[in-house]
Image (tube, rainbow, N blue to C red; front, side, top):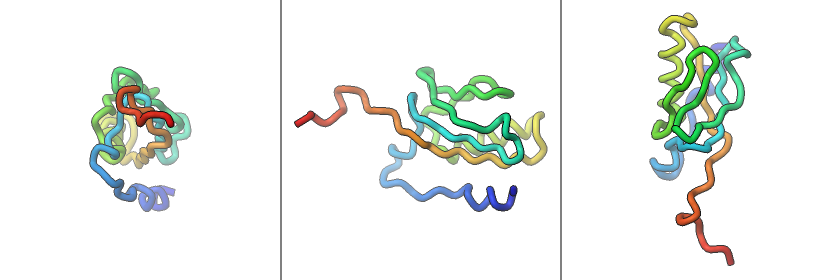
Length: 105
């Protein structure tokens, strides 16, 4: 399974660098191979953190999904799991603030 998951770690490039940065309100699917209790759906909270069972609040806002994935891998490897395989996918994008939304016609 780890090899299958490793093939999924690369993500298609998005159109702009800003589009690839996580923000409060973004929905994430985090998968830790072989660790169902650590995997699931998460939301970047208003403080810019993702709250995970073993790690607590992990800063996520301003990071790309790939950067958060690597951060989680390092944190889990530092005392919890041996060679963790982590996948972070953004599954929902937070709505822009009202002043940045296009006018309704």
